[in-house]
Image (cartoon, rainbow, N blue to C red; front, side):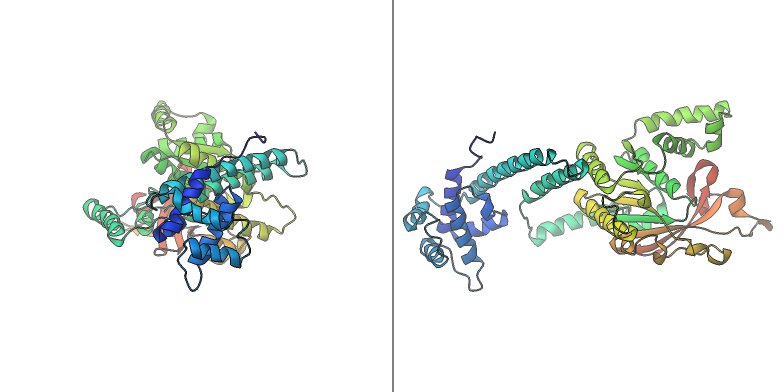
Length: 453
């Protein structure tokens, strides 16, 4: 493979340059297509394109043509490298006009991409022999290089306002017609969906709480709605529980059979039939569980990219942030978490899907024996999490209180479940507020307060 001439199209390169020397509009078309100097295989063609770009981008813009480009090459002492004045002048003779510039540029960039792929493949071979580097770091670097090549292969695009306006109006019209202002993925919690219009693509969403308040239960309820009811592909990264335990909790929640009965086997025939009924629905769902103890961020990102590319997952849940490892163990934990937080936001943007991450809050919320509602300042390990996140929510279990109904006192949380506040503490593009839920602990299931009685 190394003995072969790298892929290139000399005629397309000459035609592209000739088009730009012939027609000023061709220069703009090439720039819009993100044509770069290094996309040209020929050294002479690189020098000529450098001169064209330099003239076009100068503060006192000069139209690139044969004479101005030759003068620019003389000024930079690169005319000989460009093949001489006669060669530059000959380029316009290979094309009748600049009308086909996009075709020529596409060929030049396609061959450039192939050379880049060969370069990456060669680097992979060399790095694979380097035992001083961790193989996971090498693999992550390879994936990053490939994704960068794919991103760079996409040209810029713009649209006239009437085109964008039509798309915007289509969304407005649909909302008006359906009365369902949902622009993201629904969570199954009506008030939350009303406030957020669903979890949005590219959003980094954090759900924080103290241990045993219901972070995992809430995440499982949400992903069950996405995968079971909406039939949208979703992935759950479990760094704490095994996949079997997670599925047991899901079955309990969906079938409304107490979790402890699934462990002891003391179910009634009715309970067992309900489980069987739900198993089929769960089995057919586009849900992917990554059982990932001791997973570091590079491994998480690799799996997330694979699930997005192969299974087209539309949302990812991670349970939970504090268990994501970092390659550099020597860094202080708060610096590790800051970097992981930034990378999670970058991952959401790269994959263009919501990434929802559970995290713990510190013990300050339990000061003086009272359970205070968490705030952004209580996020454990790093203050950068609240800055990177697009949405931050907290679960806060309310202490038992006596409520009156029909003239009688009743302890609603104790009788019906645990009264819990879902606090939207930050939302970059929407309102904040509090939503009252009830955790039905025996089913690991959250329901709105108004539906709990």
